[in-house]
Length: 509
Image (cartoon, rainbow, N blue to C red):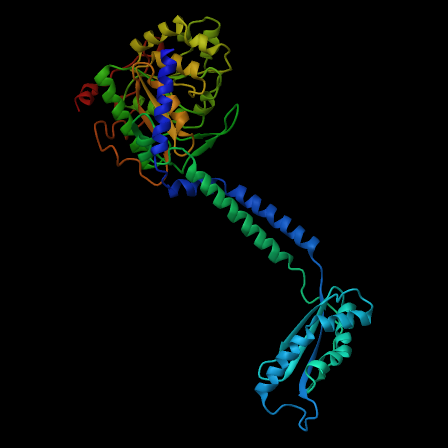
């Protein structure tokens, strides 16, 4: 009851903090969200363009225009035109109104036996002249031609009573339209539809990214999460792909790969340095690495730390802590025929010590899970595993547990209870802050073992400016396979371990 009440208080405090927090725009995160979903915007744009084309084609009605030109002249004039051009244009303006009047249209419709005047009349004056252009637009060329001719026959009866001194003389006979006045503009409609649909989706993704309550930058780690920033790992463009045996391709991003950037390697050194300091301070040996959700990069961090501590040199054991999956072997490129599945061994009440596998290539010990193991929480909570971990703490310098995401809370809590310290890996702009804080509560629920958040995949930075060049810089590089330190060799049943002759020097630095 007290635990539930405490969680309720924490949730209320978070709600109040979120309510008082001002939403700020991180344009880098917004841009990456839009770029990540740009294919959706393009597909929507294409769909809108085809829909717009279809709608325009269905609603398109070709129109035909018949046209004639008149000369405005004065009745009983010797010259046939007004001497004063400005006065002629004023009369043409008046005549334009008459030609477009409902009276004339009704007379033409009655003459042709139509219910209404089935067309549109357009009258325009040629600038600086007394010429008047009259055009009729209708749904068929025959209607347009007949309506215009009807106007030529009926206009005199209307104008005689309005402008008796003005007459019209046909300057150009009406033409019979042979093609539509405006063709179907399908390409233009599709282009406009595509641009509109794509722009709307880009704006929508931008708004969703703006209001999404994720951790978008390092500053928000401190303001949104209930833990501190332990390290920030930069986004790494270069990597090599290897095929995973079970579910999907995994990205091989190791410090031993030549394609890995300098910034990424330096950030991993800083993490190792801070962990070594923590070990010296507390004597900790069991490090549990977890995340709020899958795909945050915890396995990559666990493997790189194992590689770096092995080269330091330290004797390292990497445990695949998720007994519900089998992915670490494929990620490391290890054939399960060479190693035993420790989950299956533990489920059969065997000795997990028999499944510890030493990789000559990687330089550290590994415990792999080869298959889905039922009742994993019960197995991990058993006294047999507790005793095994205690024994390994005597044999190893560091035990790294690649724990399952906190979503499988029971399994993760079983590991946290045995941990000396924990790290929470959070990928930039991916998981909602409230779920990350739930994970923080789980990892901190046992004697405050959480060291902080490793903020992963941070774009636009070198990843080495925030923590300085502390203890441990550069050790383990440039010495061949293990350089002048020699190989670890064998150590008891795990192989003899030849202590580094300069190890004391390392610990003094």
